[in-house]
Length: 64
Image (tube, rainbow, N blue to C red):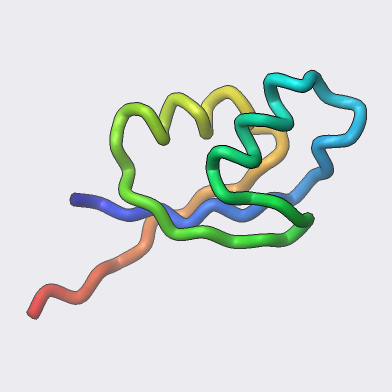
C-alpha cells in the first residue's frame, strides 16, 4: 500500500479541539514533526480535515 509523509507546519493553537485531536491521532505532537503512515481512506480523511495545518508528500518505498 502507498505511504505518505505528513509534516505539521502550523500550530493547533487557536483551532478547534476536534482539529487538535486529529493532529494527535495522526501522531503529530510538535511543530515540524513528521510521520510516515499508510495512505488508507481513514488517514486521508483525517489529513483532509487538517490540510491547512499539515503538508503531505508521497513516500517512495523500494520494493525488494
